[in-house]
Length: 168
Image (cartoon, rainbow, N blue to C red):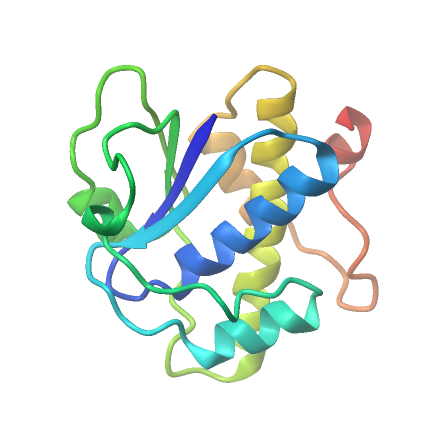
């Protein structure tokens, strides 16, 4: 399985998404090739690296790239766009490619707390995606968007939506 997380020129969200999908795929046993890209190549934001490191996921070696920097850029099973600009700019893929979109807010130019919120939204959204892929299904955009809206107590970062717990 080949997965792509796509964002616009702010590739921090796609880099964070790639980091989480790699983490969950390794932890849960999903064999996959995972990539991220932006519609433009920019720097991986230091804030993204820092907040992901806080959560135990190292994206410091990730590089920002465009679709054209990826091997076989038109051959993906799932493309997840994580910002509205990428959804609009995303190229047309072959019929076999499943496209999903979740609107993740842009934390750029904000405090680390905003970056942490984006990190946590991506954490649970990507876990939900990986769990469903392991079970041979693709979640709907509506389901993934509902995961994004779940409020988790800040004192309990290990807690997660009960549907995910029940499905593992």
